[in-house]
Structures are given as structure tokens and as C-alpha cells.
Image 1 (cartoon, helix red, strand yellow):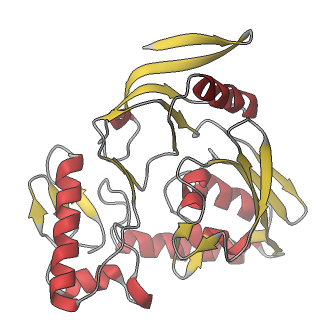
Image 2 (cartoon, helix red, strand yellow; image 1 turned 120 degrees about the horizontal axis):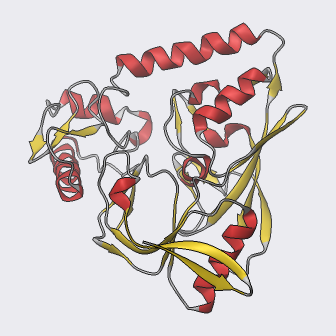
Length: 296
């Protein structure tokens, strides 16, 4: 159900009792009591104002490609930033809003002969979520070429945060849960031969395909790589590929992926993930840390 809510003569469209499994890549999720898809900075500001005036808890989501929703009910106001779109190129700088897909950002940079983001080719998800978890692959992270991010505060104002070691670390940002990333600025390198960029992108996509990234619905890597070791190879070395818990199964191609053999279920996913953690800890002493974001 969608309702138009008036705020100071302005309107935002709020979906009530929205089933988040409809926007999840693994079709799992709970019911958001109130959910909004802002399409502009002003829409976002109105949504934040609406929540603050009513003292509603804010939950901020991207495209959910690395987010497991365990909560059966998400109270307060849920903001999904996937419709907050727009990319601008100025010389060696790329500025993108949070809702743009990583793949579109990578392709746009290549089309403009800008180098730096090719290793992110094929990475699912939108910019906001990728920045929140400092997503990456093949030895690189999205923060590597990041210059700054713009964040909206509770009062609707926007501040710029410069990239720093304090702000981003391996598969992690120090942004608070619920921080609203509006846009990001990347400082890239000019490359005169676009074919070099396309070749790098295609190499990355080929590796992803060989590892089974595109074979089944998943949330990508479940765990962070511990101390420079591959979590996937570690899980594989313990013979855990193919391990099942009801509908959830460890991928036979990539030990750090969980897929489904039957109807997707968040509880099955998390119970299998915890079983993997338990067995890895018992056999190796390594306590795997989740890379996925968990809403509970």
C-alpha cells in the first residue's frame, strides 16, 4: 500500500507494510512498516524530517545485495536509496549518487577513459551499500580511489567527509548504522587506451564467472577474509562445500557463498552461516567475521 504523506505542503510516497523480500536478491526479508524510495536529495530530506518529527527509528538500505534481513518486522521508517541516481564526470573526477549500481559506475568510468574502478566489475549492489561495507574484490576496495562522501545528518543538512584510514578499513567503514550516504566523489586516472580498461574489466568478469558468482542467487561473500587468508579456500579445505541446512547450501563452486536449493529462508541462511563459523573455529581456531550486513 502506498500513501502520500504531507510534510509542510510537500509530499513523499510512503509504502506501508512493504515486503522487503520483493527487493532482496535472494527473496528473503521481513515487513517494513513504513518504507520510502527517495528519488532526489529533497525527497530524502523530507523522509528524514518525517521520521525525526515522529521519533521513528531510521533504517537505511541499498539494493540488499550483501544484506540479510532477519527481522520479521522492521519498525520505524525504512529508506531505500536505490532510486537516488545520477553520475557526473569532470576531468578525472567521477561523482555519483548513492543509488547508482556499481556496474554502471564502472562502465561510465571506462567510457570516459578513467582508470581505477575496473576491479569492481561485476560487483553487485549500489554505491551506498558498497561504501558502507567498503566492498571490493581481487585486492582492491571501493575506497581506494575515493576522494570524499556526502552524508545527510538528522536535521537534513549534508556534510562532506574526506577519505581517510580512520573512515575506511578492510571491508568496513566507521560510519554508524543508519548513516545516509548521499553521494561520493572518486579521483581516477586518465587512460588514453580504453581497450586496456575493457580488457581488465573482462578479465575480472571471467574470473567471477569461473567462481560461480553468477550461477545462483546469493548475497556474495558471507565472511571477510581472515588475516589475508581466503575465507572461501579455508571453508573448502574443511570439506564444507555442499554443506546444507534445510534450504540453504554452501556453494559447490565458492566456499564463501551460500545459495538455496529450495524456497529462500533467512533463518536457514543464518543458521548455516553460524554452523560454518562454528566448524571453522573448532578446526582452525579462526573466528570468521561476517562480511554481510545483518538487519535483526
